[in-house]
Length: 105
Image (tube, rainbow, N blue to C red):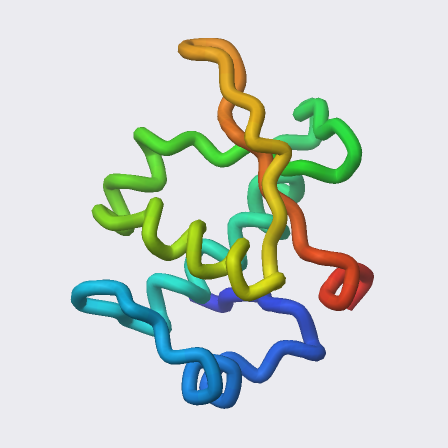
């Protein structure tokens, strides 16, 4: 399966320069999460995204990446993703989008 990430992001180099402190870290899991920013809206044409934030359902994400929170925190802390940090139980998942340096790639 092809995973899409921003063109300007060299993941191997980025991880080497910013070593993650995530138990069992796998680059493939990080790539999977980054690809969701592209694939969720591509596969859900009727989805409403506010200010470009893509809602990522934690229950679904947890099935693929059990420690997804650590990955999302790492990506936000290192200015790859940003979050709207807005969640309503059973109604709205937290939204994520690429930081400005990685948009439109």
